[in-house]
Image 1 (tube, rainbow, N blue to C red):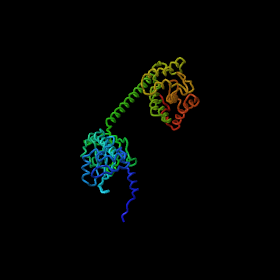
Image 2 (cartoon, rainbow, N blue to C red):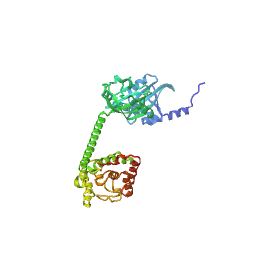
Image 3 (cartoon, one colour):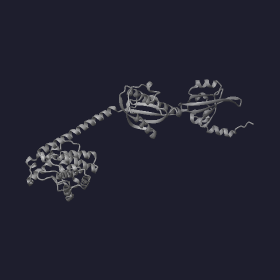
Length: 449
């Protein structure tokens, strides 16, 4: 038994449809009825629609008439015209049936403006990225994750490696041996599996001609045609790394040259003061050990070593007969000795050591309690690196032979420091004592000319 839908239900479907529904006479093409969606789409009221024919609302009348005249069910894409004269793209599905003795057609109209805009945006985006892929100066590759096979490579890849797309597509990186170090590839694969991406991964790659280039690669997984693939972008950093290496070599040579000059200046001082031969070298060694024990930074270690090598350069301004005097110095002679700090600073202050070397030389006879010279500085006014050099200078001087006395030894040196603990930085003293107790200061025992 055939059951028919209730008319009220059909009317409700007609009225609430999101697509426009237009009913028109198949012969005269006059519009009989239009639902609310069609009214909103075209800008006409239902009453205004009934005064129109289907030709009044199409922007392609000839094509529309030809389709209607076939008398068949049809689906097509057509441009429609609104009441205000503007047009919009649509998809139409139409059917024909007899009603009250006449043939009528029902057209279901869907506005596809938004969809076409989205599709156009996608196409534009695809075109943009395809263009970027092709013309990028970096090497860009797409490989299949399942087997590592290259699917596509760009012109930048060819320019960098020498391999054409025809030589690479369908082959893996292992087959063309592009990784100079296979273990670097293994590490990259491990990172990709763990994180899903690779960022600024630096490795050496083998070119088609056998030469090596350094590349910085970034990669990310994505889905292409329902397969997991890998997009990799590699930037050639060979020249940058070579420039950095050359700059580093130049910097090291300059550092070595400055240190050599400092050592030469120290030897000049020792020529004028033979009784302190080796003093600056041993103070440098002790300063370095104390700095390591204290955990000083590499920069501070280098700074205190440089200052130690030349801390007595100001003695070039002190008369030789005073420097070599075997007995005790008079007050006037001692005042002349004291000027070596300021004279050393005057010699070094215009040299760009990249660190306060000249200031350390100026301060190396200052004491934490303010009893030192030349400015009577105290506490935090004395550089931390100066405090290391100051103690090293005192310990080495007491442990070594001097014109006016034999070597006193390390035990006596530490007793003197302990007796006048207020003069020295406790952290520096503690580090130096730890070295002594471990037997790392034996190179100072019995030091002499």
